[in-house]
Length: 460
Image (cartoon, rainbow, N blue to C red; front, side):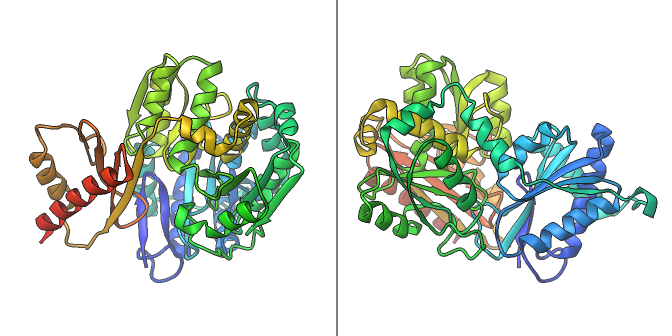
C-alpha cells in the first residue's frame, strides 16, 4: 500500500490502513481540509468535482462529495469527466476551487485527489502543505444540519468543453473536415472514450475506430500512453489504414499521436508539433519542463521566440509560462498547455490544434515528423528503497559533474554538448526518474546507462 502526499495532490493505492494507502479516512480528512482552506481563502463555499472512470471512482466520489457537504460546501458534481474539463468548469461556475478524482497514468489500484484553486489551476506548494497540515491535525468543525452543503449534478460540461475548443481562433474545423481523416482512438476504457470521439465528431471527422473506449475503468493495458502499451492502437491504425491514432491517459490531460505506419509520433513531440503551429500564427515564448525535449527550444528559436525551462510539475510550468508570457507550453509527456484556452494540460485542445496543423500541411504524419528537429529520448527509473538518501545521492552526482553545465532547481539536470540527463525523485511514485536525450537513440541510451551505473555504484 502506498500514500503519496505532494504538490501533485493526495495520491495512493486503494485499501489498507489509514496513512499507508488512500483509505476513506485519508480521503475525508484531506478533502475537508482542502474545503476549509478554500472557503477561508476565497469566501466561496462552492467546489466543482469530477472523476475519471477508474473502478474506485464512484466510491471516492461519494466520500468527497459527502465530506464537502458535511462542512457546508455546495458541490457541482460533473460525474465522469476529465482533468481539463474540471479546470475550465471551476471559473465558469464561479467556484472557489475544484477536485479531480484521478490518479492520472497510474494503474487501476490507484486513485487521487488533484486540487484546483478558483482559477481552475493546480494549487501551489505552499497551499498544498497547508492542506496536508490541516488534514493531519483535524483541527476544524463540521457543519450543523441546517448548514449542510447542496449537490448539483451537471453533465453539460462535455459539450461546453468541446464548444470552447471549437471557438479557438487557431482551430479550423473546415480544414479538418476537408482532410477527411481516418482516426483510431485508444482511451484505456476511461473518460477519454466519451470525450475524444465526441470532439472528433464535432471537428467533422466521420471515420473513427474506437478501441478501449468503454468508460468502465477496466484498463486493458498499463494506462500510461507509452509505445509498449499501445500495441492494440498500432494494429488498429495499420489494419484500418487510419491517418492518425490518438491515445490519452485516464484523465485526458496527456496526449500521444500514432502515425499512419503504426509508429508513435512521439509523446515528446506532441507539444513540439502544436507549438510549431501556434508559433507560426502567434509570436512569443515557450516553456516546458527540464525533462522535455530540446526540439521545443529549436522550434521556438526558428519562429523567433525564446524558450524557457521550468521544474517538473504542471504548476511549475504554468508559473513560468505566466512569468515569461509564453504563448504555448507544457510537458514532454504529451501535456499541452495553451493559455488562450486555459492554464492546464488539455488533450482536447491538443487534438484540435494538431489535426488543424496536419490538415493545413496536407502531409502524412510520418512525413511531417521527419521534418521536425530530431532528438531521441531514453526514459528509465530506479525504484527507491526506504533507507536510500536521495538528496545525498544527487549531491554526490552533482559533485561528480560540477564542471558540466547543470541545474538543481528540480533534482539534477546535467547538460552535455550533445546530450543531457535529468535525475529527479518522482512526485507520484516511489522511484527516481532518469531522463536522457541525444541526437540518436543509441547516444541517449548510452548516457543514461552510464549515469545509472554510476548511481548504482554510489548506492552499493
